[in-house]
Length: 380
Image (tube, rainbow, N blue to C red):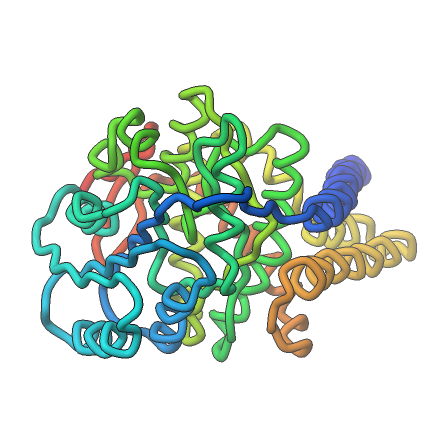
């Protein structure tokens, strides 16, 4: 048992190094200033907002894109069909904001296995401006979002801009676990990657690029059958020799009623997609599970006092990372009592990491797929 205990101690020590590095990376990244637009006329922007249905907070999220302190810009809402309440709500928004260039487009064609990309492909030809913002329907932004995003896109050699995100109000256990996963795991890993290896991927909540760059990459059609379209788009921009700019402008995603089952399915889908797309990086991600390795060391050491102290210190460190990320960096809304879920989340994350190696099957939009080594979807 001593050899096993020492192995877990080494893993826990390596995980501590990562957690401390993540804290430093978070502090450095989020203390950066935001770019400002140069003097003179600003380029026109078209915001592409594909929708499928309505969720709590959808209207508030969409309105945040209609109250931007920017000119000129156009907003296109895309729906797969005219059924359901979404069309009525979009019509009300167009009437409520007559000063905005708003178009509602029905996109009935199925152009590939990724429904979001299918809708975007039908929306993009209607874009009036060459600067394109692709954003999910559940994303809420600040009034100066477009100004900062466009200013970043105008920087030399920048081909794509995306932003970190936080979870919005979380009313269910699943939604709170999702918010903790974003704050304690995902955003720290992105900040660490920013300084260690550079950003060669996009974050799909908001992506900003120009139409000429998109056409240079093969257009949206090239992403039609990929699950992680944001990762693929960012990777192709980087491969084209352009910069993927991560802007320290935090946007907010809204899914307050996410169930526990939906949380697990989403995290397993993300894990298997990440493993396929970035196998080396995903394998290295296993070293981040500090609390799991500390508890394993505690159990294999026979509950030694030093191991107990390490476990307590590790829990404190993980709480510090989660709190610093959620409340200082992301300015999130997660209730303090939700932090009691952090140990559960850490063990679930480790279990999902292990489970991700046992197959390439994912469930998405109520359909089952296999993921190829290139990240493409194959229906079962």
